Image: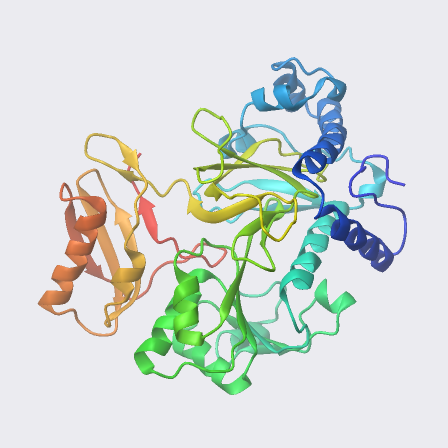
Length: 453
């Protein structure tokens, strides 16, 4: 038995047997009460806290500042007093250690996408990857009715591809005969066609037309472009059964997907630093926090906990990565807390994930406020292919547009009015036509960027 992991219980066994055992436990714990889930979380939390206090001086001092010298001193009250961990603190302090229990396996380094303009690098272990795989399999069990269906995956490149493969990926698409691990290890899966996010949307539509997949996996920004393409050309496929979205906030795409493709969206919430955070409920459109693998808090600006219906900052603590412990890490997102789920699962609910907290508008007087960027209404204008809104200063907002044809006077007026409605009449608005919208290193398209402060 692994003495550094008490929940879920991990016994030394083959890879397949270990996964089957974890899935059995998770099938039971999903129905536990929230109080029982938090109790088990605290047991596991104390193990990783004790490890961090012994091996990382940064955390030794941090826990001593709240009166916790050993993990035995840790309780819910002291936990709530622990300072929230920022990306800047991760950059400036040592939070990685090679002093991990031997049973946790190898250590590998990963970098976050850097989409917050503050990239960080952490390390993960084989065991923390095992936990990630467990959540991935749960997502399949919860939400995929037929694991043998054909998939088209619109993604940002592939790791370790040859020049020939990458060229194919960016033109006609690259085929592989299964979904890849972990799914293909435990399930007989269908094939998957992969195509690069940087390809024109017409390439994506052509691949879907040629291969007739039952499901599509894509980032919401790419899905939005695809839906618009189908609307404009009146040629949406009628065979898609589900769309799986990853990596970005979903916005209002569920309704659009039903309208255009007549199918549902299955969304998940994850990040590079921690893996899966929350999965869509198999019976509803909201999300269940993966309490067996992560402690998630939604906090007000004063660090008090949000209640159902309230929106706050997402703060997370992975429970099993002993190589780079992250305690109360502010991921940079906001979310709305949901009521307990009617499905009966005790796993806490997020009603919606709103997106990055840096997407704030700075008013001329210095006040910051979150706004609806008007992204989707602007994209309804026929000539608009892609857009990005950039606040250049406290006086100027620039709208970058990729266009199929020049805008007419009424369309320019419409865009200006939409922006004025959302941002206010205190700004100057500049519309600029561009050839393309830059993506982040992980293939995301940032809808709103503020260059202020």
